Amino acid sequence: MLRPQLPRVDALLPYLRRIDASRVYSNQGPLSLEFERRIAAELRIPPGSFVSAASGTAALEAAILATAGAASPQRPLALIPAFTFIATAAAVERCGYTPYLVDAHPATWAIDAEALQQHPKLDEVGVVVPVAPFGRPLNQQAWRAFRDRTSIPVVFDGAASFDVSSGGDFLGEIPLALSFNATKAFATGEGGGIASTDAECIARVRRASNFGFFQTRECRSESLNGKMSEYHAAVGLAELDGWVEKRAALQSVVTRYRDAAAVEGISEQIVAHPDVSLSYVLFSALHNQEAADVEAALQREAIGSRRWYGFGLHNEPHYRNVEHDDLIVTDSFAARVLGIPLAPDLGERAVARILATIGRARST
Ligand SMILES: *Cc1c(COP(=O)(O)O)cnc(C)c1O
Image (tube, rainbow, N blue to C red):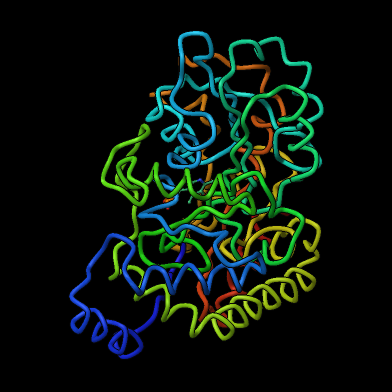
């Protein structure tokens, strides 16, 4: 289904030798600081606008604690989409919030800033965490308007969006949590970080992800240990060294998919970069039965496929009793949108076989 490829050991060695020499292994050492500077440059945001983290989920938790703090009795709820990966809900829960699930907009697949300004639960909401679905960028301006009008803090879960964020309107004051998990296009194994152009927000994020310490060893806020180690930063620096080639390789795979989709006459049903992150190639079935048929046909050929966001959070056993709005759009998308195989070295013949299998399943 997915065969990630991270930097090889030879590319890591120069960085690992620097760790041997410095004897600094974590706690904002030289490699993680260099990694942060290079990521900010890659995103084309000012130096100091990015903090690294141990994972995308830790990045989300630190950003929530830094902007909204933990849940209060007056504002126990976190508004999040039902159409997302578990991590969004897990992060708000770790900060003490009860998730409240809202539906996606059919055009953007994300929750809608304007519609939510009228949401009946807003008086009980302490934080809103919109998700960039499959990395597809969110509207920073619309969410800033939401935040300014409602005074409710907003944190973006843009976990998969590193490769589609650079220089975009998606980056701004509202903190954007990124994941560098091995399944994402740009990866450090486990890892992540927070981007924001608001320097005070970045300072609070750094404090929240490091035991509430900031410059001194006095704890000054709710916190976690969400820091990235020097070893993961080493992988990240090597990944940055090879990023131009890796990105180009993933783009070629997407081109192979688009060419093969044209041959099969299913171009409209393949969703890929630049509509979504290079972490995904998606097949969007016309209806649930088509999705089930395609899934079964792929399985018979020993080809993997995956509903990345399951059937929506409300269908996960742990979240079954969570309060939610009508989830008509989520129910429709989650059932119909299948992730299909991806690897930087996925060849033309493999792609042709995958799409021929889908094409046959579709027409039966
Ligand atoms: C990958 C992902 C995460 C989690 O990131 P980790 O680095 O695995 O903790 C969170 N949210 C979304 C939408 C994701 O796709």
